[in-house]
Amino acid sequence: MVVASLPEPVWREQLSDHESRLGARVRAAAARRERGEADPVEDFLWEYYGVRPGQLLAYSAGVGVRLEGPGARELLGRRGFEATEGGAVVPTGAYPERRRPFLAWLRELLDGIAARPAFLGCAGMHEWAMLYRTDTPRHPQVPLRVTAATLESTLESVGLACTHFDASRFFTAAALPLHPSLPTRESTRELEQKGCLHTNMDLFKWAWKLFPWSSSELVADTFELALRIREVDMRASPYDLSARNLEPIRVETAEGRREYRRWQERFAREAEPLRGRLSEVVEGLASGAARGD
Image (cartoon, rainbow, N blue to C red):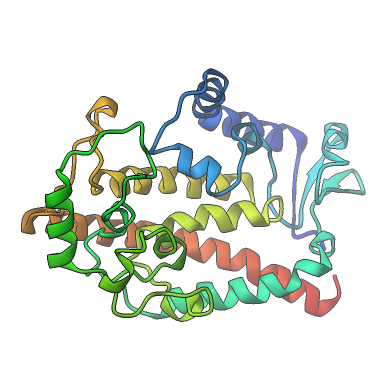
């Protein structure tokens, strides 16, 4: 079903704006990869979320938006795009049937996150738990800004209250007993909450998984938020990121934990409208499936 149409000059301008918005970041990431250089902050978004930098420049106006004009034929053959009268469109019906259960799962996840209050008491200890009593740090090329003794005493005194399974599964074996109730994959829908930095970073993951039914604008918006969150995430870690000109958030102190909490509150507010837009995409696809679009 077509819900809107864009003349070719309009969607061409959108495509150009999208490439301008992310092009420098994508080119820099690709160049780093060619040189074999690692970036402990940004590489997380490419590697953990399984996105190649160049893929981020792909364009879509979103589900049901007809792109008019002969130039739209260039998009045919790409995932999701189909020919329509006078152009190309990503229809609801092109969404893979085998992925319908994922839509239902994601719909429930997003609704649950929106409904439950933010939890702001984790103090960013997840990165500390990934380094607790281990000789194999996740980023061996980056020095630590605290001693092993400070790392251990901080984690032991602050404790672990992580609600995000995909963060907790990287805790060291020694850190696991410090968490009173570890998240599991099965408890994800009950525990995910808007105060979690990783939950809000994951908006990029979900927007990308739904692309091209989600628009390239939504993908870019969630990517840029995820990048800013990731910087704060790592600033609160035990790693020394001074070479990247990132000042630490010293969560080993009471003032540092208050600063981290303020970032949690800020990102929870910024993520809310993006989560709403993502929910609209999911709802539209689920409703289209029910109608047989």
